[in-house]
Image 1 (cartoon, rainbow, N blue to C red):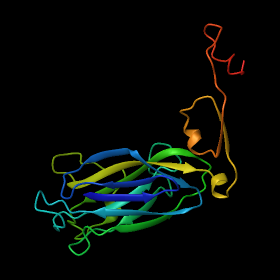
Image 2 (cartoon, one colour; image 1 turned 90 degrees about the horizontal axis):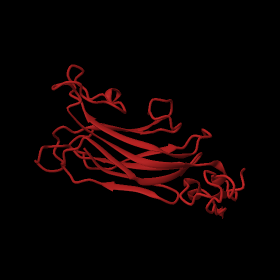
Image 3 (tube, helix red, strand yellow; image 1 turned 180 degrees about the vertical axis):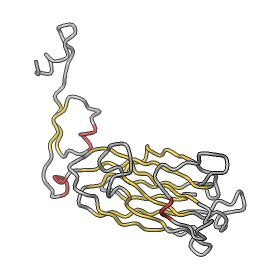
Image 4 (cartoon, one colour; image 1 turned 60 degrees about the vertical axis):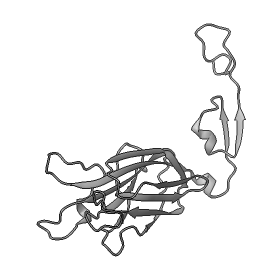
Length: 212
């Protein structure tokens, strides 16, 4: 199970802990957001706890490994080169419950905005390889039958916002907007609000905005 996930962003952080020895499947934590900037290095801390069906945390039963993904190009999947950003080796009785630190650098893709980070942990029986192989862990795995693997695991989704190079080099960024709920405002240093009043011509949404 995924016990703890932490990512310190530029202004906002992901810091999520779940109860030990808790049965998990897919969990959405999209309300937690970290902002990261292209070209900068960050560290994710992942702590895994073996699920022991109520036998207590730290039990070596069904210890898992994990992978972390970020959908950098925002196309809705985690299959593109560079989107697997790190692994957590299979836990043992000696390191279960101990955080694993993953360092990564945000690539310069030219694509900015809000996207998704996924943490996937799985326990896959080592038979017949007689080894827990992280290569078998994918971003969207699910058992297809009653006894199909993976038998144990969890998936967490979080939100990350990728900021552009202008912020990184210290350039002043300005946003001109008439929607005060725009996500653009989170990235701008200076904000110019062009208030759009009510339209005097029925059906028009452009006259007051000055775009007709």
